[in-house]
Amino acid sequence: MSQNPVFSFHKAERKQCKASILIEGLTGSGKSGLALVLGKALAGDYKKVFAIDTENGSLPLFSGLNSSSGGKFEDFQIGNFTPDIGYKPSHYLAFRDEAVKAGATVVIMDSISHAWQYKGGILDILNDVKTTSRNNNEYAAWGDPRVAKEKGLLFELLRDNRVHCITTVRVKEKMEIGTNEQGKTTVQSLGEQQIMQADIKYEPDLVLHMITAGTPTTPPVAKVVKSRYAMFVKGETYHFTPELCEQLRKYLEDGTSPEEIEAAQHKEYEDAVKGYLTENANKKTLWKLILTELGYKDAKVKDLPLSTLKQAYIKLTVD
Image 1 (cartoon, rainbow, N blue to C red):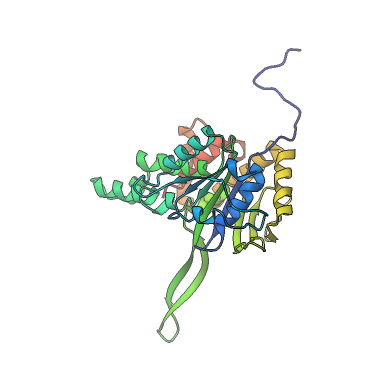
Image 2 (image 1 turned 90 degrees about the vertical axis):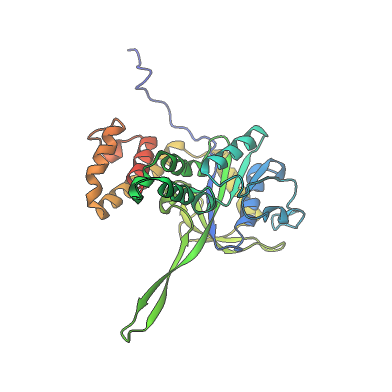
């Protein structure tokens, strides 16, 4: 019996996997240092670590300093990403393409918060659209091609099948102002919040929250917020020693099933769509229109290809 080349099967095999790691933390919490430590472990040496620096030249300050991973931070490549260039996601991707051409094994983006709310970022583009448009409607502005295109590229910052991707994102403390029973103003902390599009968390395979910055003699410490890697447990705190970083390199190098990673990612997006539609019942009609537009009319969420599911989710949550 002849086999249909389109609808065919193959044996599931573990393959080398490129890292997709997001490190979150307050300014000065040690995100850049942990990114460099992980970068060296994954690349083998710093010469193949390329770092896109948006943090006012903070990464070069590490050059020559002793690292807890042994030796010094040295010989890594820096791409100076300054406000005059404009922090569009597409500009981040252009930097990464150049890094790949130059032989990068690891690309660090420090930080991607600028792609959200700084000059040339998504919110800046949105404001320009609202300012120059005859219609000041914010929902319409989110749907403008200039905004939608760059917003869709945010997810691409976190993953690339050519290189290991390590990104950092700033967090800030979210406060709520209220009034107590005595009529006095109160300020309550609602915890820390990423300076980034809220649903970006669904894309990376490993999300770390900084606890303690590394020093020349002590390793950086971070808590696992989310993990698709079997070696890390959500909610656990890890000291990123040279031994642990080497374990991560071997874990990725020995191979992890791409099907497992993709299935876990698909499930997260499925849950995100269902949760969003539960909280926003008025968007169910919009969801149906989006599926029709993408050529998947009446399809169930679980049956959508991952790339289509991501695209549909972005369109659904434009506001």
